[in-house]
Amino acid sequence: MKLHITQADYDALRAHGEETYPHECCGVLLGHAKDDGNHVSAIVRAGNTRTDSAHNRYNISPMELIKIQREGRKQGLDIVGFYHSHPDHPAMWSSTDFAEAHWFGCCYVITSVDKGKANLTNAFHLSGTTEDDKAFQQEEILITKAVGENA
Amino acid sequence: MKINIPTPLRAFTDKQATVEVNGATVQAGLDALVAAHPELKNHLFTPDGKLRSFVNVYLNDDDVRYLPAAEASAVSADDELTIIPSIAGGTGRPGVGASRVLCCR
Ligand SMILES: [Zn+2]
Image (cartoon, rainbow over the protein chains, first blue to last red):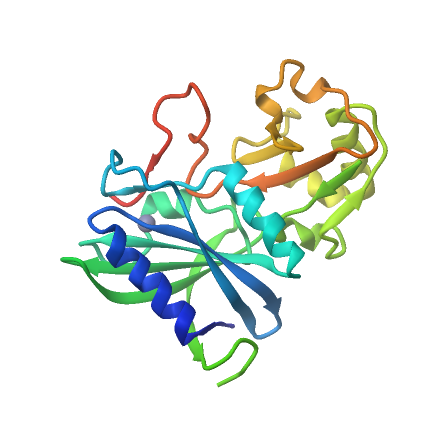
């Protein structure tokens, strides 16, 4: 299983983390779940732009998520993952990221933003089907030239 | 009513993104959904029958937890229920302290 994403979307989600630095950014990956992994067709920025939040917190409200899901479905797209940034912190999931992860089968993308520059971007697939057997598994990010392409 | 199913739960609805059920209230709709797709039960509800804390249910644009009648709220045939698991915690609710949750440290 690999995460398939275009160069443009990949660059955009990394740039988002640079823009919100030193705060976290977050967003939604829309696309299709296929046998070889999740394919991203579009990314949607999420989260409010309030700056009163701590640099180490992020959250997408359920209503915002519902609106993104509605818009996606109009284009035939489903939520296949999420992304957020880790300002001055490694691109690895935290215990809180794991505890708060409930979208089984989806991909959680984390970008470390060091001193304002996007550094590493890692993808973690949330496997399992329940809170008891869930696990984050790192997966390869496959950059494609165009949506749906395989190389 | 129509119930929108999020991607992670479609494994239990034969991949359907929406399920049409009959019921006069939110609770009746959820019960009908679980009756049609029994595997969903454990994913939506705790053993004592309460919605799991990270599972949000919206009646159109309203969080069911905050409707005056909550799960007993009346639903008409053209209403929509949406089941949406939370992302990064369930504290983004009015009146419950901080609207953001600690993520990484
Ligand atoms: Zn995180």
